[in-house]
Image 1 (tube, rainbow, N blue to C red):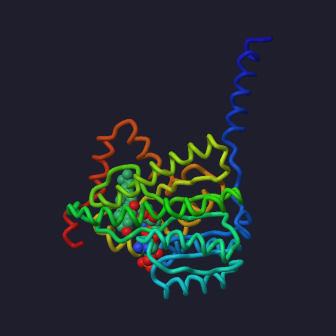
Image 2 (spheres, rainbow, N blue to C red):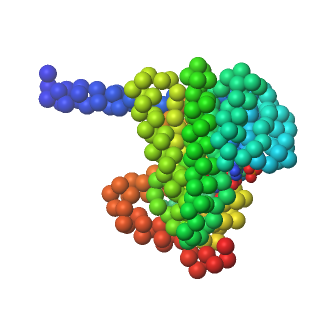
Length: 293
Ligand SMILES: NC(=O)C1=CN([C@@H]2O[C@H](COP(=O)(O)OP(=O)(O)OC[C@H]3O[C@@H](n4cnc5c(N)ncnc54)[C@H](OP(=O)(O)O)[C@@H]3O)[C@@H](O)[C@H]2O)C=CC1
Ligand SMILES: CC(C)CCC[C@@H](C)[C@H]1CC[C@H]2[C@@H]3C(=O)C=C4C[C@@H](O)CC[C@]4(C)[C@H]3CC[C@]12C
């Protein structure tokens, strides 16, 4: 065998192995047709947009949040867009009994569950940490503990369907940003819980996927109101963001990064030059504008 062939054959083998390993299944909207999905925090923002995408894809949708009037409108719109069915349950995720109740409702109304999209967040402040421990505790209940409670309740149904858990997190759950101390703590907690649980599912051959979504700044009403004056970055569109989350969940991806480059690259820098990333982040904030909040 010539020297060239000796090099070429293993090289081609490596290329083929790489292609095989990295070949991802393509997303098709039909993947969600007839699927039974819970979307939390769906009265507005990214959650609302996810409900509309799922409706267009023909899913059975159960939306939840506190404001009944908004949920009614979301359900109406979902039915217009082509949802197989659309229903709501209203209540606060500060109460773990309510979190469990929502899952029970999915069992009663839909007869099972294919995808659990955990997206809601409680209201917080965008400013220096004020030392209010009670607020941190409340936010941990809403943004973290209720996610755990819903996961535990939904697990039997998700095991049965070979379903998916989609956890909406943030760059603020991977990197420390200023002015979101309590919020950031709740998002880091989600990574710890769900990444650890994913490992156990793998060891125990539990066929339930866990997708953690790492989002940058998105143009929802609440985010724009809180941070647009201070964060010197243009926000990404909530509609596209919502679709990317659903795609990632349907493809059973480990993590979703949106937008990809502006979240993935800073995280690569974080692992090699954390102080430099912290410096870059501070450069993206206009602290002078904070007083207005
Ligand atoms: N927008 C952004 O820039 C970013 C957002 N994210 C993440 O994306 C997700 C969605 O964010 P976004 O769409 O901006 O949020 P919004 O503020 O627009 O929506 C939050 C939702 O949660 C509901 N909610 C609030 N409090 C409670 C409660 N106590 N119990 C139950 N539901 C509640 C709200 O409805 P109601 O008030 O009726 O209860 C609403 O439906 C969150 O997980 C967030 O962390 C991540 C990175 C950036
Ligand atoms: C410089 C780069 C490394 C990327 C920076 C991205 C920064 C600016 C992005 C990443 C995560 C974003 C926050 C978030 O997750 C959720 C909310 C809740 C909302 O109600 C108010 C806005 C807020 C605080 C976002 C503010 C902007 C943040 C810090």
